[in-house]
Length: 393
Image 1 (cartoon, rainbow, N blue to C red):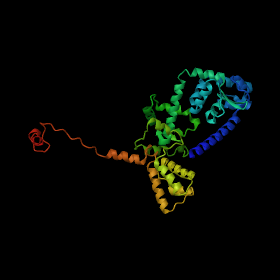
Image 2 (cartoon, rainbow, N blue to C red):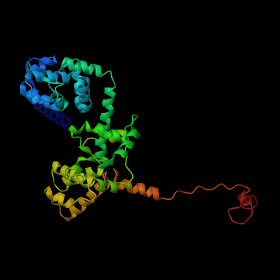
Image 3 (cartoon, rainbow, N blue to C red):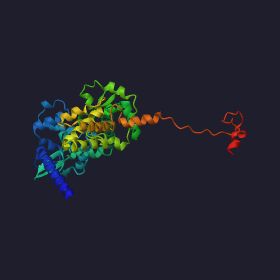
Image 4 (cartoon, rainbow, N blue to C red):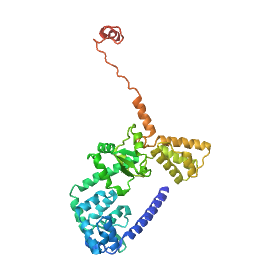
């Protein structure tokens, strides 16, 4: 019964979200029959829409052009392989996949697409959206599609995949380490990927994705979390110096890539235990428990000092008694001990302690094999074969 109820809720939520997507898409759609030719498409735009598109493409003198001149300049730009190639290289992976889906035939009927799949491509004039007979149609004009088909046969798709992977690694590194030098980043990337990247190339590649707000910045010789930008980069070099003496935690590629999601963090059992205690023993609702745990995670991850958990409880209206506070703080400490820290180069305090203990533990000595003619280990001065060897036999 519970599964049926959950399924019903999921269906209702999906239907609600689809209705929101559709309303948004309708607002962005041109009402009328889909147009396939680029010139017809541009000629049908308003002067204001053409100027907005020309501004996005940085067309010189666009403010002084009339509608026909704007349409001609944009038609030339949007059918230029170099210009389109650069757009393809800098697109978000989600939009790139959707563009390719539409470009298969040049037109796709889809009432369930969400804005993140096409919005930037639409703003750049390489995808157009129409509402016709109550249905939504996405169109890649024939001229743009023809250029895409040609570029598909070049090195561009492989170059795009490579550059996107560098971007993904940069986002993951910023989330896991907070700060990483370009040289260290290149070494990490090259250790897990066939195609190598040079430290000098990283800035140029990542500059393509500056508009995506991926959660990282490139500052001087570092890739950093955008959190440091909020502090005017004042603490970056000091933070990097503090990391220098620590080893770097480097997970396997699949796990590392998961860290690229700015909302992702490793949900360890200790965090789940704290959430459960806040709900079950302190009487907070689920959202409050999650907010407290999430806030502690962010503080543990990014701060060099331990967070004020008591203040965080109070800020969320949670007021434990002394016994409850003692138990809650023990859980907070346990969570912090198992949270990956920027200051520890991605290690948890617990992992780093174990690593240091294993390195400091003396290795067991391997017994040396004594030859028959060697001096006897007992110190008698006789040869081994004429002393303890005889006794051992």
